[in-house]
Image (tube, rainbow, N blue to C red; front, side, top):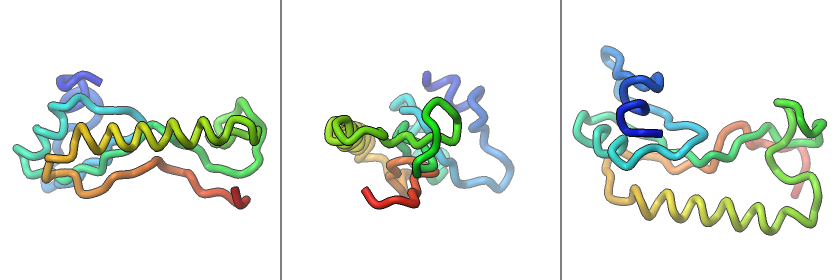
Length: 112
């Protein structure tokens, strides 16, 4: 997301008495965290991984984002680790970031 869209047009306008933003499902422009720093807004930085987990049918919104086939899991997990490392590297000097997240709705009823 561009800095202009992410701060003003992407649903992240500062509301009265608001001091926390969850940045979800996509990487934000580097200026976004800088603006949070400047305005004193707490920022939850999150990777683009999402899914409810479990063994739901692929192709539906209820499907797991985690690969259903064992052969794809190592590559997927390595990709997530690289993305998390990059997110932290790019944003590590921003005091507004109070949480690093791997994603939402990631719980699973099965053990992997």
